[in-house]
Amino acid sequence: MPYGGNDWLALTQEPTLEPELPICDPHHHFWDRRLQSLPYQRYLLDELNADIYSGHNVRSTVFLEARSMYRPDGPVALRPVGEVEFVQGLAAASASGIYGPSRAAAAIIGHADLKLGAQVAPVLEALQAASPNRFRGIRHNVTWSPDPAVDNRESEGILANATFQEGAKIVRQKGLSLDIMIAFPQMPEVADFARAVPELPIILNHIGALNRVGLYANREDEVRAAWRAGIAAVAACPNITLKLGGMGMPRMGFDWHTRAVPIGSETAMIRSYSSTEIRVRAASTSLSFARAIASAARADTSAEKNSLVQPLPYENRPIRCPESVRSWSSRLASAR
Image 1 (cartoon, one colour):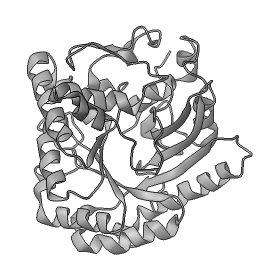
Image 2 (tube, rainbow, N blue to C red; image 1 turned 90 degrees about the horizontal axis):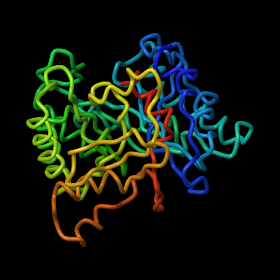
Image 3 (cartoon, one colour; image 1 turned 90 degrees about the vertical axis):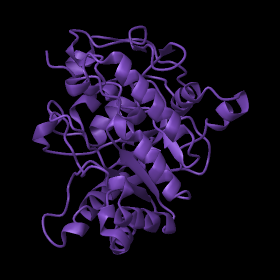
Image 4 (cartoon, one colour; image 1 turned 120 degrees about the vertical axis):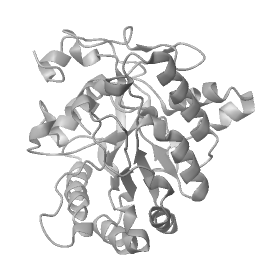
């Protein structure tokens, strides 16, 4: 039975934790006819609802760009606007209430190429026009690794590029946020970048993109030390928020996707990546968990640790933000 499918996921059942807890899921995608995302070539409102209405009180969600439904022609820089147009329609359908009480894509994170520098402004304006009431920021995947197995999205050292930083400053001027995907050795570069644009809210995805496969396999002590040092570096930047997610990705090296039966809460355990053992209950994890990792890496005072627990900048009110339910962590294995 292929991993990630509903039949496979159904093999592990457990009671919902804290079913009354109001949740904003801060990271999911939408796509259709996406052949590379087996077994999920389609993930739209019905598929999302099958996840979020599984016993939890998910009030709203945040869509993250996934290179989906780009415009097929026109200026290349503006083609990502098609994705926001697509998701704005899904969000409007969800807001009608006929799909249920949750509001899917209550915030939308699109994409714009920061290498455009100051010329990224009209792209951001087009994204805002496509979703005047939901567009909150962009994500730029800057992943670069010497590992040939890694899908590099940018050139080495792009975060230090002056034109790229100029584009990031335009994002801030527009009152938007920036999600970033990286390879974990790039975390010190992210910290330097954050200091160069100190007023820009930066959301670092997937706990800093830990990788324990390919080039990084069987190098546990070295990888752990580099990851912890990177977490400490980004934790020192007040404009960076670390997002918990991607634990089910094969690159994390836990091999959960190879199991005949999906993991449950008692199995989902990460050891040795902070000063204490951390149990990950994928059905009820919170942003404070991610910030606690940073706290452990910094080993600072209690007051400083408490200051790290903060909401994502997508919404104005504090809310615990788990990255969806158990099934989504498995689905992330097929997403990029």
